[in-house]
Amino acid sequence: MSYAILTHSFPDLLGILPGVGRVEASSVIGYSPDEQVVRWMEISSTGEYHDHRGQWKGGAIEFEPLEYSISGKKATEYLSIGFPSTGKLTLRSVTETGEGKSILECAGTRLKSRSK
Image (cartoon, rainbow, N blue to C red; front, top):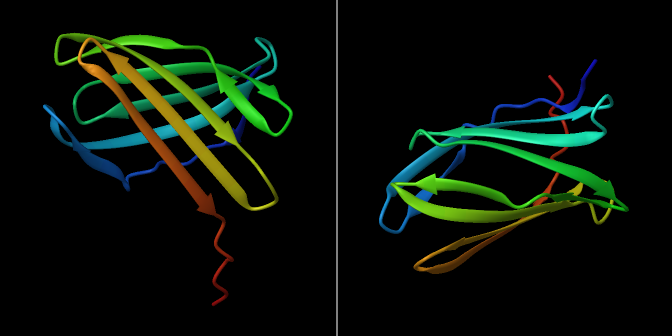
């Protein structure tokens, strides 16, 4: 049986990739105790589907390198998510292709709930 540690659609994950154009993506993160892995599953407007598999290591999740193709070109993505303190998150994605390397680094802070 699998349990989700966080399930959330992120429609605001969007950007512009060189040679590809505008990209929007939705993700879900979950934990499978049977496999003892964290899964980050994502689908984007380019038709890409990523299924990252990772392990908790201290205050971070280190994912296995993911090989895939985008616009017919081979790529490898190295993904890690960190939790440096309560309510804080960091994300680092390094994608290597035959044309070079792109690095995405993000940091976020949990917003307080708005009371009604």
